[in-house]
Length: 456
Ligand SMILES: [Fe+2]
Ligand SMILES: [Fe+2]
Ligand SMILES: [Fe+2]
Image 1 (cartoon, rainbow, N blue to C red):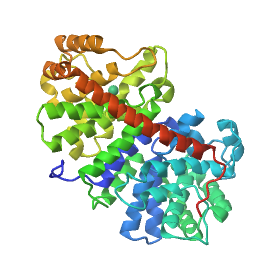
Image 2 (cartoon, protein in one colour; image 1 turned 120 degrees about the vertical axis):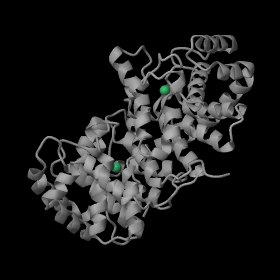
Image 3 (cartoon, rainbow, N blue to C red; image 1 turned 120 degrees about the horizontal axis):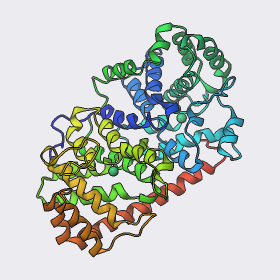
Image 4 (cartoon, helix red, strand yellow; image 1 turned 60 degrees about the vertical axis):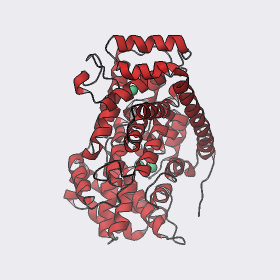
């Protein structure tokens, strides 16, 4: 089988799509991953790292806090505790502050938990070795006795992350220089290795560097230029694995629809088999299914998990998820087809859908497949406010939507004619995923509740 993209996707293009959502999950951390990637890159360049090491470092930085989704949900707190902290004056980690926020008996090592979870999430899914390990140690202190290459790269990431966190939004950046340098110097021992600290102080001492860090559009451009020669071109299998990671996180955050994306992916693939699509196209549709609600990573958990009816304000935020799916997948033109299939799943053939209000002729068949797969999966799974619809009711809903010109009738007929087959497939995939998520959740809970995470 040939690759699904004429021009293969690069690891960077895939990571930036994810990073796009991560940088929007909380207003306090807008641009955090891009900033940290840029600062890491500059420190690494000044240390004379090889091109490959530098690219692995920057790629890790782009998604380094992915474990945050788990910490956020278990602790029911805002993300800013990890990445930004107003009371964060004299030390790199104000433990009392964490204590009050998490309402747990916190110890120094707890900050490492999201890094460990990020590692566990990514370790079997990263197309490039070492990146999960670099993420794993990004809050560890520097250990002179164990100065492996990975730990050195992690330590640069750690330092870049702390510099990014020390920058306060509403104060002019140059006036913050003294404070940043002072805190970094004070904490060099035991946190960072001295050469990296020396380089970062040198950078922070220059006006242009500080202005750059705060100039998100410029940072993105610099990173794009830097990855013009990609670190790695990835294959279809690797993209599928990565899309499963995203759907795991999306599904995990919405406890009421905890296996929805996995269900949509399997139904979309099965519909495309009925359409006699090539294996290549079937896989691409499966990926679009996994990514269709990717923009929900941006929607706050209290809205995703609200049992009652959403208010107008909440509903308007909820509706934005497809808009963000579209823009996350706009980071590369190679994703164009997947982007349209994934992001148009709430569009309706008669133009009554959202957010682009497209009509029949503007929607490709791939988009129509994801649209039908989404509705079918949603009505046949349990929701907090209702039980799943049984055969007759489900068929009635789908047929009505086809009749009203909302869903494609050819696709609806395929499902109506083979209802049990589709329903059993959905059930099987969702049960399998539920078990996998449960296992992972237990692992994550253990990590979050453990007192110390020492690996070396
Ligand atoms: Fe972190
Ligand atoms: Fe961070
Ligand atoms: Fe959706």
